[in-house]
Amino acid sequence: MDTASYNAEKLIHFYDELREDKAKLSTSVYYDHLVKWGTSPEKATSLIRMMDPKNTGYITRNGICRTMNFNLQSLRALKDIEIIKTDMSPSKRDSVALLFLELASRNVKKESMLRQLKERLEIVYGGDWSCFISDGHYWSICIHNPGTNLVFKYRDHIYGAFEAGKL
Image (cartoon, rainbow, N blue to C red; front, side, top):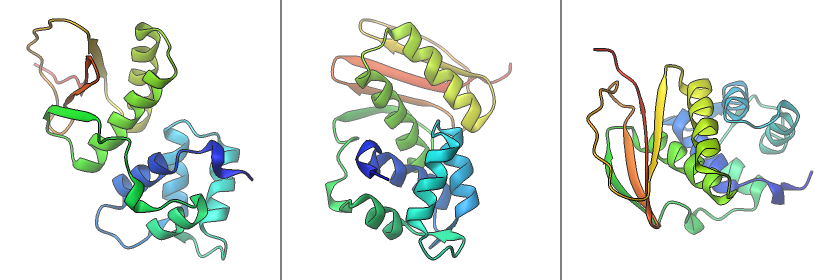
């Protein structure tokens, strides 16, 4: 299988979000997370087989890098964003921001981009998510669940997502 069509940086961020401080991660947990984030089951299975060639049932960050022929020193996708406000864990924040950037790079209409983002966040994290893009002035007061708020600037736009809280 050709790994050029996969984003190594995104795969590493997904792993980090699940792993936190563990040295290795169950292949079944990583597989489920890849599928939730939109990877087809066939592609997820193929990636897992390459990342765990000895079929140990576990993968490591280094295994992902080896499979993807990726040097961790070259992480770059999130260097161009400016975090305005967040209370998300760093790994979750990075996964959500990467999804925003991936959708923005497809040059789809903003409405479609937001719909896709909302749908994916609800599949991955559950709950009822709200998302926005601002290219001008925007004032808002929102209630969100703890650990679910992210607002950042990328180029000339402000992007935001949060899981709606209850009054």
